[in-house]
Image (cartoon, rainbow, N blue to C red; front, side, top):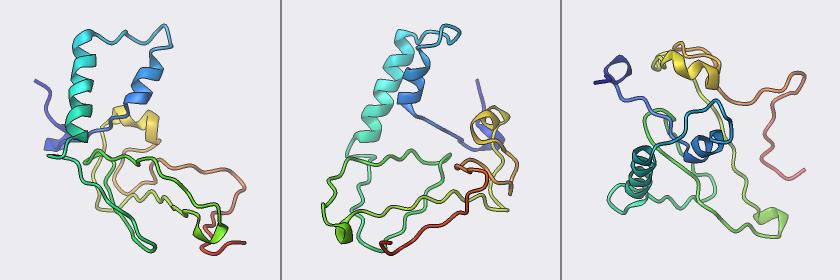
Length: 135
């Protein structure tokens, strides 16, 4: 039996990525049992028993640990007026006292060591900025 990494559950689940990988010949085909397991996971994650819906209001902040909780954004309808448009900022934090990740996740995040910058999108020569006002 596989033990959780470092004695803790560490998970990443993105079914659309798993299914998209099936287009590559070198990727093993999903078995019926694996598809059934993903169906059950999707069903449980969407159920009223486990799902938590959040209705964000201006100024709300949500902190999630990508490897400890399954989360997703749902569809939304935006407003046509610029002053009412949704403005969502995403920030990847890597705490100095966080948790080490399995080496298998290095291909996805670049780093798995505690306190190192992991994941996110960085474009060489670009200054990071997130204006809160319309320009």
